[in-house]
Length: 209
Image (cartoon, rainbow, N blue to C red; front, side, top):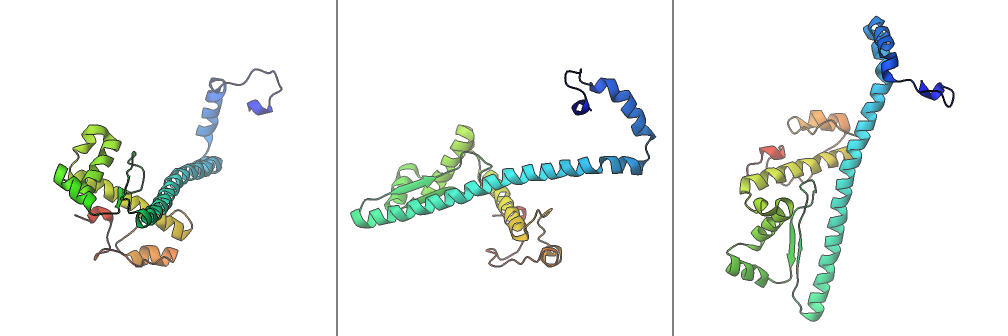
């Protein structure tokens, strides 16, 4: 309304027309109301899907960037180790639970494992997990138990699987289905799963260890 008014004219306020619009709305049939709002509802849904996909794709892009950079660093470290005999340890952890990358540690010698185990009584893998917990939740995060970390890992795995499903389908799939996968996913979206790493094909939330 305001866009159609002459420049310099006082804008129409919602309170000025709310009673009139309310009366017109109540006078419409349910079908007329649906037709009147169909376009804007569709636009809002599309905007929400674009926003959600954008946020999710940003995390996936970060995951791929980190994996590529870490892989490059590891190759460079191996080259320098072989040329000079210097020993290296590379560690990468998240600082936000929304990030997809798993804790990562690479070392050129098993002596690193022996050192940390003998001096701290923890394995190097456990220490890296504790380090990530510290980055994410501070000192309280370090005290997280195994069950809490497993729940986080399941959630992250489910998110990655859903993203890969959308990428394979070429569009947003409402949800991943594990039971009757052939009928629910393969027949509808022409997607098959190969190389599943576990003996049982199931949702990550059903994995117990």
